[in-house]
Image (cartoon, helix red, strand yellow):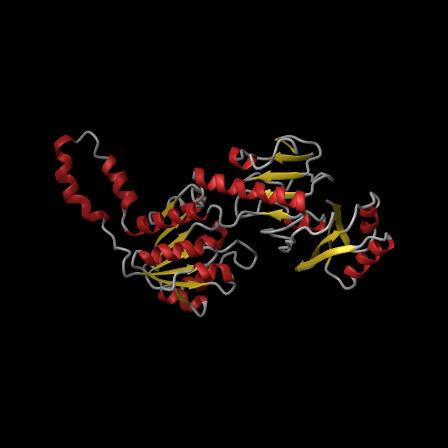
Length: 387
């Protein structure tokens, strides 16, 4: 029986992934096997000894102590692409409201309440205050061509925009899904020089923090409109305000309101609604729950932020999973222990990511209860579990 602890409200459809005869689900457990979270921070949480995995129903994992989890041999899963359509639709909304002064127009129209027959002529007289350019024929630059960036690129292209993408690490899967109409920028500077509109879709890391700053604003066309539905820290807010005052940036639409942005006329701050749809919440919960179930039952790893993808069809009667430091002779030491126990290996898969290696080993026959403790005694082994 596995115990799944939820740290936030999780879509019931996601929780239905766990068969009740094999899983207990609750918001409080003293020794859970897995944590399923959305936005709750785990940085101040003591991770229990029983914990085998954490899954976040969402793409970002800033609320999870990933490095600590790696040290403890705990894979952390996220759900890239599960909320992509919801965010794509918000980016499309952002493109439209950054161009046509729709938000301001609605606010002004509401102020006419009580003016009766004056309203129609006032609307005709003042509507020119809220004009703005169409998207068709304009150039949209996209930084980051993952699940969301590809969807944004494709829909913008279908609207008649010229789309240029920049992603030096684009995956084969994303490249296959990208419209042929989308052009590839040779570099970030080249992209920024061409854009009328810009949309950011990169994770927030030490390398991308402040990605848009004074230097990058200096490459941009005057009057650019920028969408940020990825992470607030990707834009240096102080440098942004300067670029707005100079007219380099005409409008900035962000899903991440901050104090120094709210008073600026040409900033539209949305309260983090990118993935706030019932469909996105269900998709993220289903994907996160599925990852937990798969890992606990089979040891297979896919879409982990700290473990390598490692998936193997089961071929033996028993399975061993091992995480270890990615140093020489680890596989040799592991197989030596198995040989000493007279255990025959049916199949073995070894993958590594950064300084961590992960092994799935299928064996013939049953396993002695003492095997896991013997494997853990190998210098460099972080985690070992029998399935």
